[in-house]
Length: 290
Image (cartoon, rainbow, N blue to C red; front, side, top):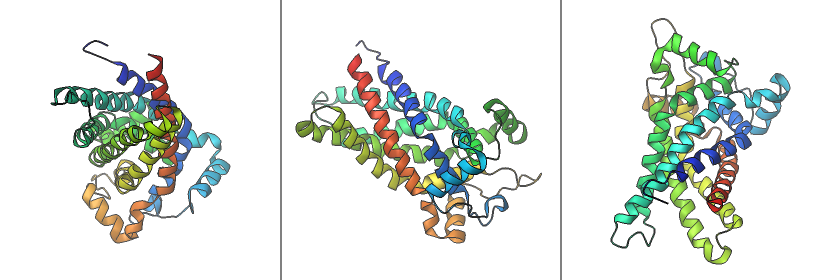
Protein backbone atom coordinates (compact mmCIF):
# COMPACT_ATOMS: atom_id res chain seq x y z
CA UNK A 1 0.00 0.00 0.00
CA UNK A 2 2.80 2.40 0.80
CA UNK A 3 2.87 5.23 3.28
CA UNK A 4 0.48 7.37 1.26
CA UNK A 5 -2.64 5.50 0.24
CA UNK A 6 -4.93 7.63 -1.91
CA UNK A 7 -7.49 4.91 -2.49
CA UNK A 8 -9.91 5.97 0.30
CA UNK A 9 -10.04 9.45 -1.25
CA UNK A 10 -10.62 8.18 -4.79
CA UNK A 11 -13.16 5.54 -3.76
CA UNK A 12 -14.96 7.98 -1.49
CA UNK A 13 -15.31 10.58 -4.25
CA UNK A 14 -16.48 8.10 -6.90
CA UNK A 15 -18.97 6.37 -4.59
CA UNK A 16 -20.36 9.76 -3.45
CA UNK A 17 -21.01 10.87 -7.03
CA UNK A 18 -22.79 7.61 -7.87
CA UNK A 19 -24.98 7.93 -4.76
CA UNK A 20 -25.78 11.59 -5.55
CA UNK A 21 -27.11 10.80 -9.01
CA UNK A 22 -29.30 8.05 -7.60
CA UNK A 23 -31.00 10.12 -4.89
CA UNK A 24 -30.98 13.75 -6.07
CA UNK A 25 -34.76 14.12 -6.79
CA UNK A 26 -35.46 13.23 -3.14
CA UNK A 27 -32.99 15.91 -2.05
CA UNK A 28 -34.82 18.48 -4.19
CA UNK A 29 -38.15 17.72 -2.48
CA UNK A 30 -36.46 17.95 0.93
CA UNK A 31 -34.99 21.37 0.13
CA UNK A 32 -38.31 22.76 -1.11
CA UNK A 33 -40.18 21.49 1.94
CA UNK A 34 -37.63 23.10 4.27
CA UNK A 35 -37.86 26.46 2.52
CA UNK A 36 -41.66 26.83 2.57
CA UNK A 37 -43.75 28.34 5.36
CA UNK A 38 -41.28 31.00 6.53
CA UNK A 39 -43.60 33.66 7.95
CA UNK A 40 -40.89 36.33 7.92
CA UNK A 41 -39.73 35.64 4.35
CA UNK A 42 -42.32 37.01 1.89
CA UNK A 43 -40.96 34.83 -0.92
CA UNK A 44 -41.67 31.57 0.91
CA UNK A 45 -44.68 32.21 3.17
CA UNK A 46 -47.00 29.94 1.20
CA UNK A 47 -47.18 26.23 2.03
CA UNK A 48 -47.10 24.95 -1.53
CA UNK A 49 -46.60 21.28 -0.69
CA UNK A 50 -48.26 18.99 1.85
CA UNK A 51 -45.42 16.48 1.88
CA UNK A 52 -42.68 14.75 -0.09
CA UNK A 53 -44.94 12.94 -2.56
CA UNK A 54 -47.04 16.06 -3.18
CA UNK A 55 -43.86 18.09 -3.78
CA UNK A 56 -42.53 15.45 -6.16
CA UNK A 57 -45.79 15.32 -8.16
CA UNK A 58 -46.40 19.08 -8.30
CA UNK A 59 -42.82 19.88 -9.27
CA UNK A 60 -42.94 17.30 -12.06
CA UNK A 61 -46.30 18.54 -13.38
CA UNK A 62 -45.70 22.28 -13.08
CA UNK A 63 -42.01 22.50 -13.97
CA UNK A 64 -41.25 19.20 -15.64
CA UNK A 65 -39.31 16.17 -14.42
CA UNK A 66 -36.10 17.98 -15.31
CA UNK A 67 -36.75 20.40 -12.41
CA UNK A 68 -36.14 17.55 -9.95
CA UNK A 69 -32.55 17.47 -11.19
CA UNK A 70 -32.07 21.25 -11.16
CA UNK A 71 -28.82 21.79 -9.27
CA UNK A 72 -27.39 18.34 -9.99
CA UNK A 73 -24.09 19.64 -11.37
CA UNK A 74 -23.12 21.73 -8.34
CA UNK A 75 -24.19 18.70 -6.28
CA UNK A 76 -21.87 16.43 -8.28
CA UNK A 77 -19.08 19.00 -7.97
CA UNK A 78 -19.75 19.11 -4.23
CA UNK A 79 -19.47 15.35 -3.88
CA UNK A 80 -16.28 15.34 -5.95
CA UNK A 81 -14.75 17.60 -3.28
CA UNK A 82 -16.77 16.93 -0.11
CA UNK A 83 -17.07 13.16 -0.58
CA UNK A 84 -13.45 12.75 -1.58
CA UNK A 85 -12.10 14.75 1.38
CA UNK A 86 -14.61 13.43 3.94
CA UNK A 87 -14.25 9.70 3.43
CA UNK A 88 -10.59 9.81 2.48
CA UNK A 89 -9.70 11.85 5.58
CA UNK A 90 -11.85 9.69 7.87
CA UNK A 91 -10.42 6.32 6.88
CA UNK A 92 -6.84 7.61 6.54
CA UNK A 93 -6.88 9.49 9.86
CA UNK A 94 -8.57 6.59 11.65
CA UNK A 95 -5.89 4.21 10.36
CA UNK A 96 -3.06 6.58 11.33
CA UNK A 97 -4.37 7.08 14.89
CA UNK A 98 -5.10 3.37 15.31
CA UNK A 99 -1.49 2.53 14.44
CA UNK A 100 -0.30 4.76 17.30
CA UNK A 101 -2.40 3.03 19.97
CA UNK A 102 -0.92 0.41 22.27
CA UNK A 103 -2.89 -2.39 20.62
CA UNK A 104 -1.71 -1.32 17.20
CA UNK A 105 -5.27 -0.74 16.02
CA UNK A 106 -6.36 -4.33 16.63
CA UNK A 107 -9.68 -3.11 18.07
CA UNK A 108 -12.00 -0.33 16.92
CA UNK A 109 -12.07 2.66 19.26
CA UNK A 110 -15.42 4.51 19.29
CA UNK A 111 -14.10 7.82 20.61
CA UNK A 112 -11.31 7.86 18.00
CA UNK A 113 -13.69 6.98 15.18
CA UNK A 114 -16.17 9.67 16.26
CA UNK A 115 -13.46 12.34 16.42
CA UNK A 116 -12.06 11.38 13.01
CA UNK A 117 -15.52 11.39 11.45
CA UNK A 118 -16.54 14.76 12.94
CA UNK A 119 -13.26 16.37 11.90
CA UNK A 120 -13.45 14.97 8.36
CA UNK A 121 -17.10 15.96 7.96
CA UNK A 122 -16.70 19.54 9.20
CA UNK A 123 -13.50 20.20 7.22
CA UNK A 124 -14.78 18.83 3.92
CA UNK A 125 -18.13 20.60 4.22
CA UNK A 126 -16.53 23.99 4.87
CA UNK A 127 -14.31 23.62 1.81
CA UNK A 128 -17.22 22.56 -0.43
CA UNK A 129 -19.72 25.16 0.87
CA UNK A 130 -19.92 27.27 -2.34
CA UNK A 131 -21.14 24.26 -4.32
CA UNK A 132 -23.80 23.65 -1.66
CA UNK A 133 -25.04 27.25 -1.94
CA UNK A 134 -25.31 26.89 -5.72
CA UNK A 135 -27.19 23.60 -5.34
CA UNK A 136 -29.75 25.03 -2.89
CA UNK A 137 -30.40 28.16 -4.97
CA UNK A 138 -30.98 26.09 -8.11
CA UNK A 139 -33.13 23.47 -6.34
CA UNK A 140 -35.51 26.05 -4.88
CA UNK A 141 -36.30 27.10 -8.42
CA UNK A 142 -35.46 30.79 -8.24
CA UNK A 143 -32.34 30.36 -10.35
CA UNK A 144 -32.68 27.88 -13.20
CA UNK A 145 -29.68 29.08 -15.15
CA UNK A 146 -26.57 27.01 -15.54
CA UNK A 147 -24.06 26.66 -12.74
CA UNK A 148 -21.63 29.25 -14.13
CA UNK A 149 -24.27 31.99 -14.47
CA UNK A 150 -25.64 31.19 -11.04
CA UNK A 151 -22.14 31.47 -9.57
CA UNK A 152 -21.51 34.80 -11.31
CA UNK A 153 -24.84 36.22 -10.14
CA UNK A 154 -24.21 35.30 -6.49
CA UNK A 155 -20.66 36.67 -6.63
CA UNK A 156 -21.78 39.91 -8.32
CA UNK A 157 -24.69 40.63 -5.95
CA UNK A 158 -23.45 39.16 -2.65
CA UNK A 159 -19.69 38.91 -3.05
CA UNK A 160 -17.44 36.10 -1.87
CA UNK A 161 -19.32 35.97 1.44
CA UNK A 162 -22.44 34.89 -0.45
CA UNK A 163 -20.71 31.68 -1.52
CA UNK A 164 -20.00 30.80 2.09
CA UNK A 165 -23.47 31.68 3.34
CA UNK A 166 -24.59 29.15 5.95
CA UNK A 167 -21.10 27.66 6.30
CA UNK A 168 -21.36 27.40 10.11
CA UNK A 169 -24.54 25.27 10.32
CA UNK A 170 -23.45 23.37 7.21
CA UNK A 171 -20.14 22.38 8.80
CA UNK A 172 -21.83 21.61 12.12
CA UNK A 173 -24.41 19.45 10.35
CA UNK A 174 -21.75 17.64 8.33
CA UNK A 175 -19.65 17.00 11.43
CA UNK A 176 -22.72 15.71 13.28
CA UNK A 177 -23.80 13.44 10.42
CA UNK A 178 -20.31 12.03 9.99
CA UNK A 179 -19.85 11.56 13.76
CA UNK A 180 -23.01 9.42 13.85
CA UNK A 181 -23.03 7.83 10.41
CA UNK A 182 -19.47 6.55 9.95
CA UNK A 183 -18.83 5.08 13.44
CA UNK A 184 -22.33 3.50 13.45
CA UNK A 185 -21.71 1.95 10.03
CA UNK A 186 -18.32 0.59 11.08
CA UNK A 187 -19.73 -0.77 14.38
CA UNK A 188 -22.76 -2.41 12.72
CA UNK A 189 -20.64 -3.88 9.96
CA UNK A 190 -18.21 -5.33 12.50
CA UNK A 191 -20.99 -6.90 14.61
CA UNK A 192 -22.86 -8.27 11.60
CA UNK A 193 -19.75 -9.79 10.03
CA UNK A 194 -20.16 -12.97 12.10
CA UNK A 195 -23.75 -13.80 11.05
CA UNK A 196 -23.71 -12.20 7.59
CA UNK A 197 -20.05 -12.07 6.61
CA UNK A 198 -18.34 -9.11 4.94
CA UNK A 199 -20.87 -9.18 2.10
CA UNK A 200 -23.37 -6.79 0.41
CA UNK A 201 -26.24 -7.77 2.75
CA UNK A 202 -24.12 -6.72 5.74
CA UNK A 203 -23.23 -3.43 4.00
CA UNK A 204 -26.90 -2.85 3.14
CA UNK A 205 -28.21 -3.30 6.70
CA UNK A 206 -25.34 -1.37 8.31
CA UNK A 207 -25.75 1.62 5.99
CA UNK A 208 -29.52 1.72 6.54
CA UNK A 209 -29.11 1.81 10.34
CA UNK A 210 -26.42 4.48 10.07
CA UNK A 211 -28.67 6.69 7.94
CA UNK A 212 -31.55 6.63 10.46
CA UNK A 213 -29.37 7.88 13.30
CA UNK A 214 -27.78 10.62 11.23
CA UNK A 215 -31.18 11.81 9.89
CA UNK A 216 -32.62 12.21 13.40
CA UNK A 217 -29.53 14.06 14.62
CA UNK A 218 -29.01 16.35 11.64
CA UNK A 219 -32.42 17.49 10.35
CA UNK A 220 -32.76 20.61 12.60
CA UNK A 221 -29.36 21.88 11.47
CA UNK A 222 -30.22 20.97 7.90
CA UNK A 223 -33.35 23.16 8.03
CA UNK A 224 -31.33 26.07 9.42
CA UNK A 225 -28.49 25.83 6.92
CA UNK A 226 -30.91 25.51 3.97
CA UNK A 227 -32.73 28.68 5.04
CA UNK A 228 -29.51 30.60 5.60
CA UNK A 229 -28.14 29.54 2.22
CA UNK A 230 -31.33 30.52 0.42
CA UNK A 231 -31.69 34.02 1.90
CA UNK A 232 -30.50 36.94 -0.16
CA UNK A 233 -30.13 40.64 0.45
CA UNK A 234 -33.55 41.95 1.40
CA UNK A 235 -32.69 45.48 0.34
CA UNK A 236 -29.74 47.66 -0.55
CA UNK A 237 -28.93 48.13 3.15
CA UNK A 238 -28.08 44.41 3.21
CA UNK A 239 -30.68 43.64 5.90
CA UNK A 240 -31.16 39.90 6.17
CA UNK A 241 -33.98 37.82 7.60
CA UNK A 242 -31.68 35.69 9.78
CA UNK A 243 -28.51 37.01 11.40
CA UNK A 244 -26.97 33.60 11.93
CA UNK A 245 -27.46 30.00 13.06
CA UNK A 246 -28.87 30.72 16.53
CA UNK A 247 -31.12 33.50 15.28
CA UNK A 248 -32.52 31.21 12.58
CA UNK A 249 -33.20 28.50 15.18
CA UNK A 250 -35.00 30.97 17.46
CA UNK A 251 -36.98 32.67 14.67
CA UNK A 252 -38.06 29.34 13.19
CA UNK A 253 -39.29 27.92 16.51
CA UNK A 254 -40.92 31.21 17.55
CA UNK A 255 -42.81 31.72 14.27
CA UNK A 256 -43.49 28.15 13.14
CA UNK A 257 -43.11 25.96 16.22
CA UNK A 258 -40.49 23.37 17.16
CA UNK A 259 -41.86 20.89 14.59
CA UNK A 260 -40.62 23.21 11.85
CA UNK A 261 -37.07 22.10 12.68
CA UNK A 262 -38.01 18.67 11.33
CA UNK A 263 -39.53 19.89 8.08
CA UNK A 264 -38.38 17.56 5.34
CA UNK A 265 -37.44 14.77 7.77
CA UNK A 266 -39.09 12.02 5.71
CA UNK A 267 -37.30 12.89 2.45
CA UNK A 268 -34.12 13.49 4.45
CA UNK A 269 -34.18 9.94 5.78
CA UNK A 270 -35.50 8.48 2.54
CA UNK A 271 -32.59 10.15 0.79
CA UNK A 272 -29.97 9.30 3.39
CA UNK A 273 -31.02 5.64 3.40
CA UNK A 274 -30.62 5.00 -0.36
CA UNK A 275 -27.66 7.40 -0.52
CA UNK A 276 -25.78 5.49 2.17
CA UNK A 277 -26.75 2.13 0.69
CA UNK A 278 -25.54 3.12 -2.78
CA UNK A 279 -22.42 4.78 -1.37
CA UNK A 280 -21.26 1.98 0.94
CA UNK A 281 -22.11 -0.81 -1.52
CA UNK A 282 -20.13 1.05 -4.21
CA UNK A 283 -17.30 1.87 -1.81
CA UNK A 284 -16.99 -1.72 -0.55
CA UNK A 285 -17.00 -3.08 -4.11
CA UNK A 286 -14.28 -0.63 -5.15
CA UNK A 287 -12.23 -1.74 -2.13
CA UNK A 288 -12.66 -5.35 -3.19
CA UNK A 289 -11.36 -4.61 -6.69
CA UNK A 290 -8.00 -3.29 -5.49
